[in-house]
Every structure is written in C-alpha cells, then in structure tokens.
Length: 388
Image (cartoon, rainbow, N blue to C red):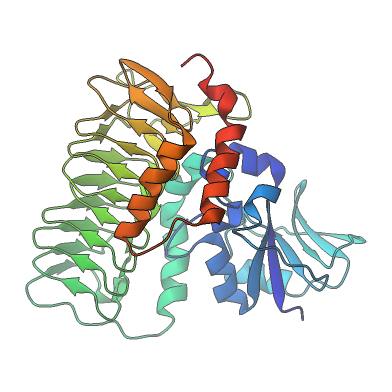
C-alpha cells in the first residue's frame, strides 16, 4: 500500500471557502481536534502532503512522486471511508455522486462508487455547523483507549466522566464542565481559568486559555495558542488568535493570527429571523446560506478595535484592520483599513510590520515566505478594494 497521501484542492470548493483559503490549502483547515490533514494522518499512518495553488507551495510543500493516494482535502476522514480508500488499486478512483473523492496513482482507469455516508467541508459555514459531528469523530480518535488526566476537585463535572479527556500539563481550576451533550477534550498545556463554564462538544487546543468567567456553548473548537473570554457559541478558531475579552462570538469562524478587541460582538441572527446571506467570492455577491444562525467569517491576520459590532453574516478578508463606532459593512476586503466611517487600503508594508510584531510576541519569525504570501494575496484581492 502507498505510504503517501496528497490532499488536493477541488477548485470549486477552494473558491467557495475563500477568504479562509487565501492562506492555506483546503486540507489545512482546522475542523475539530485535528486539521483535515492531521486527521487523515491519524487514520492512515501515512505522510500527508498538499496539491494546492502555486503561490502556496513554498509554504505547503507538494509531493513529487507518483505512488500516492490523492484525496479531496474537503473530505472529513472517518474509519469507514479510510478502510475503503486504502483498498483502492492503481488507477482506481472513488466517487461520491459526481465528485471524485480519491484516486490511487496518477491516472484514472476505473471508476468506483462510494455509497457510504460522507462528511465534507464545502462552504465556510460548514466549519462551524458540522463541528459537533467532527468532534465526535475526533474525540474517539484522540482518546483511543487512553486514560485521561485527573480533574481537580475545585471543578464541577456534569455528565459521564468518559466524555472528558485532559492531556498532560493542562490546568483547570474552579470551572463547570458539562459533557452530557458532547465530549470535551482539553489538550496539552491548555488552561481553563476559574469561573469558566463549558458545555460540550468542545476542544481546547495546546497552550490555549479560557479566561476567567468564560461562557462556552458547544460545539466549539479553539485550536493551539488561542485566548478566549466572554461568551462564545458554536464557533471555530483555527489557532494563534485572541478573543480574550468580554463580548459575544456566535456561529463564526476565525482564522489564525486574528484579534478581537475588548467588547467586540457579532450578530448571528437577523432581527426578522430570515436566513442569513454571506458574501461569496464565486458569485461576487451575497448567497443564501440556508441558515438562520450565521455570524462572522474572518480570515487570517485580521483585527478589530474595542467595541466593534459585526452584523449578521459578515465576511472579513486577510489582514484587515477594523475600528470605529457603528456597524462596518458585511463584506470587508483583504488589506482594508477603517470602519463604518470609511475604509482605505492597508498597504502591504504596514501589514507586514504588524505581522512581524505579532509573530515576535510568540517567539516566531514572519519570514520571507510569509511576506511573499502577503504580497500575492494583496495583488489577488486588489479589485475588491477599488472605490474604498
């Protein structure tokens, strides 16, 4: 059997998932305890690479061989699906309806139908709306018969103890954790401060923090090095981002290196209870999500000032800087600067300077690869800033 998996970007899906996929392949999106790629690696034991946009390949190295299993990066790995894919012979392609989900080798000779259940991520709102299903898969995969660390006596646990797993180095004191509706996984060296209230399903990533008095409603996923305070409901934060203060975040997705200022709030429900529309880079207009609850989609490196108010169904691109009184409009292009009183272009040089400072706080370097990525995204998104 092949020892290498390549997750490919389906072009339509990649476009639908913008602006989150400006800075990463589809297979690098965090959808639960794991990213899409990490989950495939856990199930298969294989090395995982990406087949993605040319400009992303300096950061996400492609695989140059031919002895591969190519899998659609939008597909959430499950045990049943992996067992079927792993049995593909050279030249066999696995389809679900009209979508090719896997190919063994580089040339398709035989088409095979997959009739089992399929969980996939095709739109930004799939990331939070399918988080509960994904967390159920990931919890079993991550625990896999291991024994949880102890929950200190200062905490209150509601629900079956087997639905809580605490990794080494995690610190939890004075919290209320309810696992009756779904599992809670606290990763290595994470911290839940006193007064926090958590309802599963929920994942807190390595070195992440829930600040004092945080109120977390499942299903939520907070990746590594994330700081969260206030009230959060059914939201996913990829990693290295902060919503450290009071304020509400609901039915939302934040990328990496984002920061929400104190008392930032987003609406996730329209006043007339109508279905929410969201900006689409494919349509270059707003599309109906079919959801009554849909909040904020914010791509990597974007930030907002204190008391920012995001309207229902707001999309923020890469490296936007938002501030000022009132509601900003509900599509804010990449590298834009300002708020309700007006927007202007946020020059790459300024954006890089900010990113360098943010990385330095984590002991990291915003290197030439990252700078080149910024320059490319700035150029790709220039037309959306016309007339700011």
